Image (cartoon, rainbow over all chains, first blue to last red):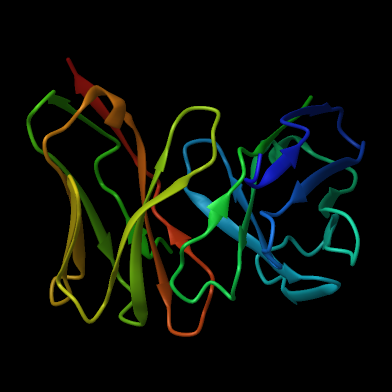
Length: 115
Length: 112
């Protein structure tokens, strides 16, 4: 499958635990974006990364959330000490360039449920 | 502050008829407008886009119209097919900014 791969597809965590979501971009894409979709809402930008660099994390909550895109391996979105309000679908997208036209390739999403 | 608004949460049309999905925006700096289609339990997929310097873009059964003075765009699907049933998101980006601002989506149901 040459598309954007996300795992896990579903993740259940209890309040206070950590959640790690992984994303492998499409082959040849070095630009990765994370978006979050809360229930009944549109997707909201969280962070934009290139290999080993965070370009823009202006959409990330100030605490508990972090993202990385190492030289080797997938991009990871990490949520520490999860709370019920973190329950959402988290979508990763990639693009071959900086996304000037807005056309992004999305993965199927990781659905986080916090009990 | 919702910069991209889709005021119709849902739309139902008969197969073969035209589907018209609407979107309004407030930010004059947006330079690209896009429509994404999303099936349940899947990620959004790019459908069609339009640059702010154009007023129409057509791709097969899908046409997007942009009215800059009214800050309004619409997606026309003709003829509609049952496989078009999905949530359609309107999105916009501004200038050199790569961030997409999404509307809340419209659930389109095409009845056979």
